[in-house]
Image (cartoon, rainbow, N blue to C red; front, top):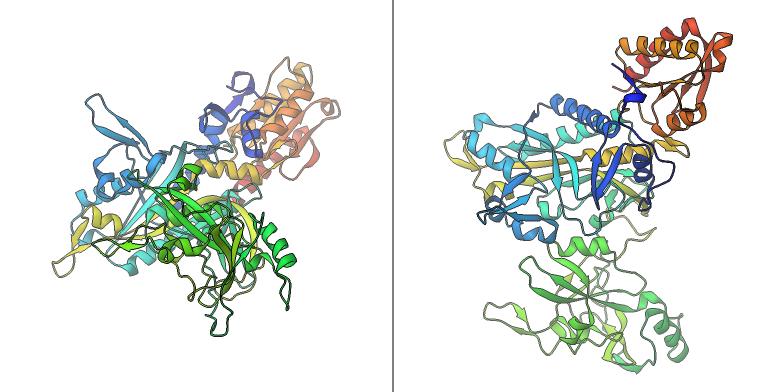
Length: 603
């Protein structure tokens, strides 16, 4: 159907929105695809909704190709199923909670594992019913603390989530691979580059987990790659643990005066000045840095924890959050430290915390209590020697040996991953990059089936817990990723597969001949089955029409203007920047042929 721009619900903007940081946010707003309602909440306008629906259609087709069946659950859900899986509390403040007029507790669903599980439990009871794959494309809600980047990280977003139900782990593995392959086909059809990386399961639970990331410097996710093929989200990278070191000949620890050395840099300088080594200068990697955090658990309990990491590394906030999920984590406040006077700010060392503290006791169940828990980086192995805080202002301990002078409650992966670090699988040095998460797949196993008692009878008539997989794809986030991947300084440049219109026709000049010719060609292309936007606005200059066409980003643009007196029109490929003049009498067939060829290649 031909769409006349003069009647289309659209207004473009010449200036970027004040709160926009990334290209997709700027361009989707300026080009009239979305409008902000509140932080992290957006209205999808006609152009944006057409793109969103085109993405959804490709996703639906690829889900159908693996035998998945579509359902649709409510966004407003009761509390009870989420309590059974502990996620009513585990989600913490990210969950939108509300009550009805009778005081009943409800939530706006961030995901629907519970609903899918209960639906299968209600409908199926035998191994003969399985396997089955169900999916939906539904709006999700998360109370993001810092919504940003437009629809990349919002409080309301559209997601495709599918779930597989199998009798055993072998079946789960097959369902997982079906989804993995379907996602690769989906992103290829969308024209969106991606990498697949190992990931953590987080609050979702389960064993195997992978993310699909669109590589982009503005992405929130840091991922790593090695020459040998290792790829992982930085949160999921495991540190190759060094071998223990024999410390039989290590010198005794010594408390030394280190005035005004409250930072690692100051401590390195002062150590080289006052206590130089004979073999080499002291460096940051010789220091054991203490990082004190406060955890707020889902039940509201607040806990202070100390972490020891090599002084040449910083804590990665996302790895920190992942390590302590579902608790919320933040740097300890002065009020937190005041409750633990043994934590001397700037001079805290391992001898005052964890198993090393004189306050450490065991409760009646044998659990440690009384002292601040202490975890160390995996590189802090037995026999490693450190300079660490002396738990006394202006003092540090030298020659402090792990395993001899202190121990820890365990190891923790929260230190930043650095360029050149060894890959965990030995496949070479790591390279760091940034990306936008566009999909995440999990082998959930039996976590939700156990919690909600999803069992069926097996071949022998015995009840067996069903095993599940979960496979999310961020539909609205994909739209933003496509903009990040397909734009230039002038505006959007949509791939053929998702563009709201395949062709935009401009009547760029005055006179009935120009408008009639433009109308005739636009109608002919529309009649051939293509989406055509005809810029028929009579009182808008050619310059404004050109600027709008470049901003809106349709794959092809036809300009009917001054060249008409010479019997030609201009045909532009917005994506490649090429422009050719074609004879008016050949225009309809040539354009239809070009569009047919490129629409076919997009499938």
